[in-house]
Image 1 (spheres, helix red, strand yellow):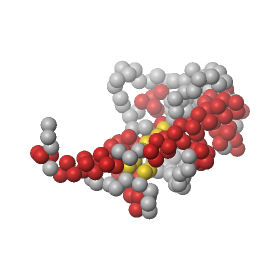
Image 2: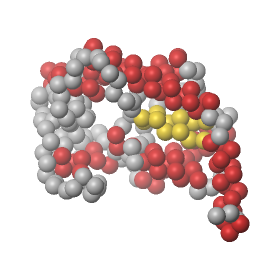
Image 3: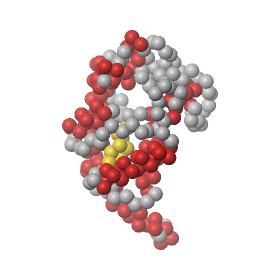
Image 4: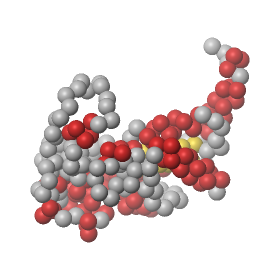
Length: 220
């Protein structure tokens, strides 16, 4: 994600905040080395970080997510900006639509450290990729819990992928990594460009904050 954000800023200028490590990672607490901060600390730290960024002049903040475990946390954080007035806007960007063409994907699961993520890591941090170790643990879906798709439980990831590994990393290639990374970089640049051009969100936030003080006066 860091690699993608820095390269996106070369396409569309933006101030890039230092690496931010304090996201939601409860699902990996059983793995050695995981540091999982409480939900209260996660939200408080993120709020104070964006508040301080705004105090230093950053009135449009694009949070670029690189971790699936944050895909519920970050929209909630953005939504919670309506709790009380802020003089800035938070935008959340993650991933990108699968581009057409490119090298074929053979990984049926390909969710975590599978073919795509490992390929992308071969571009951003090749020193951390060891394809010879990819088969040392199973990336297969263990299917320990059988629930309908519209029923959520927090243990779902561990129930499916207790090794925190989903897919076949050994299928990774640099060609796929370059293709996917370029698509991600372009998506972040596009999000930055859109945030820069957005002159309505802050106006609407301020309108909302004012109306929320007097809800009985709001016209139906």
